[in-house]
Length: 166
Image (cartoon, rainbow, N blue to C red; front, top):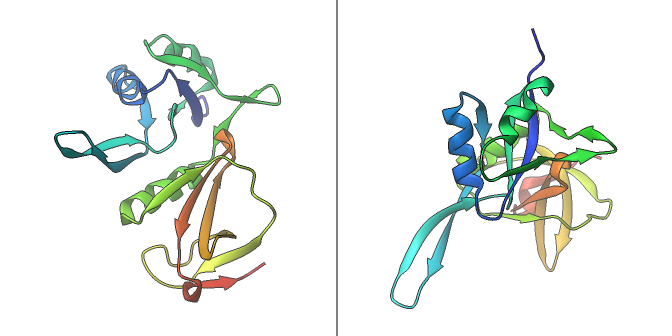
């Protein structure tokens, strides 16, 4: 039995949903984290779903089958780090899903984060999660790192719900 892992697939611009659908039609397990955004046009406002991480989606497959995913239109390449295919642990995929299911406001940020304190969330829908806390302006942000794609999820958590654990 070949080991299935979550690989990080880079897609062409704004093709994440189409690529995800094509991969699902091929029988592959795909995770495309989506967030809702209110878009303003000259004549109307509309809520649209967009990819949380622009140009990225996750494909659960085995290494020998990576080429299969690259055959679909819009798939560009699998992300590599230090010559190896980037993979994301199941636990991190579950963390992203859990955050998005809560409906809390999420921003993504791919800037480097300076070393900060590790915190645990004491209350609310994300209770008991741990992550890195940074300060941005006068707000506290809870950071979930997704190293496979050099992205971070930032969630605004009131200071009273954060306990420093490291």
